[in-house]
Length: 145
Image (cartoon, rainbow, N blue to C red; front, top):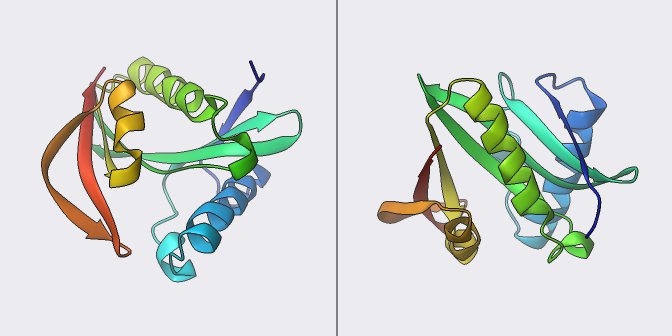
């Protein structure tokens, strides 16, 4: 199993944030053709999580308080060479633990349809009808923690 250390920040001036942006650029902008402007909107006031393998930023996510007791997780991304190593699952468990320790009862997210099975394995349930975000089909998924 690949050893990973998770670091977090709320500062957009942090090297951790810069590492998250680097992963997101590779995955969302380069691989999925999401417009740069769309990818970086709403960056202030969020928690940024990055999983490092050695000194390499491998996986990331961001989260914010959507309403009392509810965290919204977004921008979960893993570099291609680290996929299949369960790092995104480990990062999501870290985020769930952090959320629970902060009094959060529910995590919600907008999952790309191709990623829905990943979130289902983590215990998330699909809620409602699908929607398009940046031209990519998504569904809302929730998990009580």
